[in-house]
Amino acid sequence: MLYLAQEEHNPILPVWQEVVVGLIAFALLCYVLMKYVFPRMEETFQARVDAIEGGIKRAEETQREAKQLLEQYKQQLAEARTEASQIRDEARAEAVASRDEILARAAEERDRIIAAGKDQLTQERESLVRQLRGEMGALAVELAGRIVGESLADEARRRGTEDRFLSELETQPAAGAH
Image 1 (cartoon, rainbow, N blue to C red):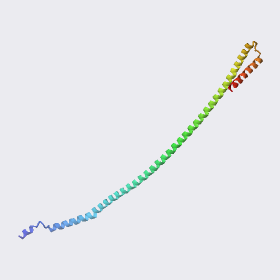
Image 2 (image 1 turned 30 degrees about the horizontal axis):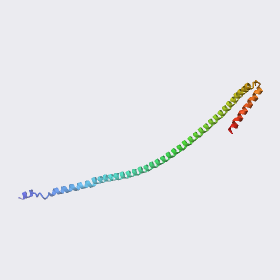
Image 3 (image 1 turned 135 degrees about the horizontal axis):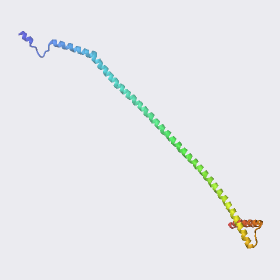
Image 4 (image 1 turned 120 degrees about the horizontal axis):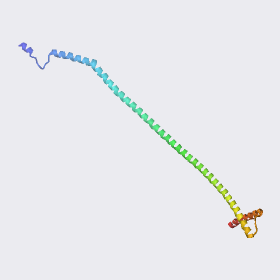
């Protein structure tokens, strides 16, 4: 009976040999985990933390650089706009100066053409007046010769008669104008 009692084991209480083997296995597992696995996990964790923090720092640095570049771009854009405005103003001033110069040259040319035209008209008028006076003098001498009945063929007499007639013509309009 004793033998039977030994064979019957209480299912609630573990067998002491199994407990010892379990404790040794647990201790060995803890030793391996603490010696090899946990340090590697810590290294991996630290590397990830460093990568994340480094990424954040790089992102912040990149953001600062981007802001600086944006400010430089804005400044260059403002300078370019100012320069473009100055160039536009200079071009307008040059255009106005060119226009004024062209207008001045055109006015000078116009005045020169008008003066030349007036001179030409005056010369042609004087030429026509001389020609008409000569023709009128010849007609007056011929008419006077018919009226008087004598021939005024003599050149000296004829010239004197023409000159007298023309001087009378010149004095009559002046006297009539007053």
